[in-house]
Length: 111
Image (cartoon, rainbow, N blue to C red; front, side):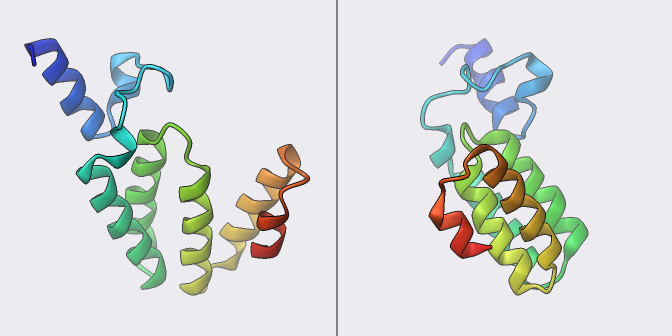
């Protein structure tokens, strides 16, 4: 790995892909499975469940920026927020999703 690839990987790992001008399509392949992304997502979701709202929001927002398709994570986040007593986040997120995907029966069940 050369220095520019290492810089991109490091920036991506810390959620700075947009600072480098990287689009969603140019994110490194397999980045969704990166151990850092998985670890931060777990921290964020646990923070949602255990009502650590500010820390959870920061972690979850970072994860969403790092994923190519954050839809599955948003659904998981909605469920975790609901378990933590913040149902409004789930309602807003799922309703926004249903505006663009009205035939998504799974999202309707979650809502």
